[in-house]
Image (cartoon, rainbow, N blue to C red; front, side, top):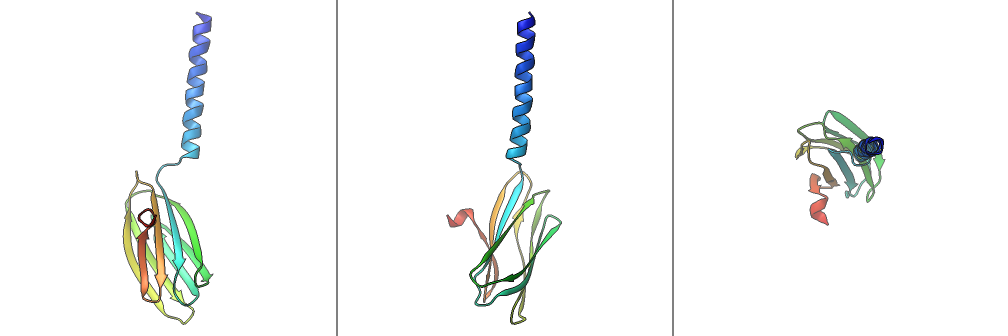
Length: 123
């Protein structure tokens, strides 16, 4: 009887430890964004807002990328403001993120404007 109780206690501890590790290592509702500068100029400043957070970047050379990660707290979309070295400002709103779904997106800045490309669709 004592052996059975110890075995059940050990199994419960292992289950709790496994659940805690899973939650820590595989956090749900994660968004990852790659900001890709494909314009002919350096990005002097860029701001990307999503899920109530704003991520700021500066001096991103042509051909370079910057990335950020955020927690998807609920329904949201991207609001992007970019200023190139020449002073040209571009703004766009697009995309959709929701909790329960991980998001992997690519925001591309070109001389023509700012667009959203789904990174998974690019593979």
